[in-house]
Image (cartoon, rainbow, N blue to C red):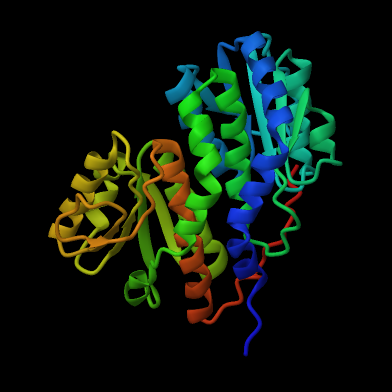
Length: 342
């Protein structure tokens, strides 16, 4: 019997990692939430790369939808290359890194704090330079992640951010949804997305669609195609894809549309159904599609945790796809676990 890959083991650990974080981080979430409430920032900025940047994108939508505070992503080169001083006296900064030691992320986190921002770091290595430069360092408690492709650290980064957000906004509905989340992620792990295999095993390219928080999920999904399976994938908002990229969609072109149970679901389903009508192979995590293939999903009772749960069955599928295409998902070509960009 073939030993499971590190990636497979880590995907299977997601529900337990989520439970560990939520069980052990109440105090850290409360302190960071209180600090944000006292700061009352006029803007939040995020600092991250790769999967961590997709976690930041998810948190952007979550913060904007929950608090009304605008969120923007800062390019780490502002500090590491351009050495540009930042005026951030009315801002909060959220820095995300699994390792906590990418030099450009650390440099910008330090610069944000020096510029006056209340700085939070979400890290899987609490003894790290990025944690050291933060006012509020938070251990995402994902545990050791040996696979190069991030999975459980991506999920736990988002959960940590949502835990802080729930305290900042004193949002009872979000707190309750987070309490249920480990069980919901376990259910998501059991969702079978293997119908994607026939379209993607020999595919050359695909689109991943979403809107709002599910666009962050689509962005992460597209990255994992490239990282693990050498499959070209582009993520688009289901609105933005209609402004040009839809022209490439033809018969048998594969499309994965990530829809949560939120106000964007009908819009995503409409775009997906339109592509299916053109003969594309369209897979949709919703019951609203027409001529689309339904991907099973978990209805968590909250739009944010609904969207987050969609990444779990996708991760499970993409690990299988990587092996089916002849790759080792634990050893992507030309990639390392820690990318130390400057």
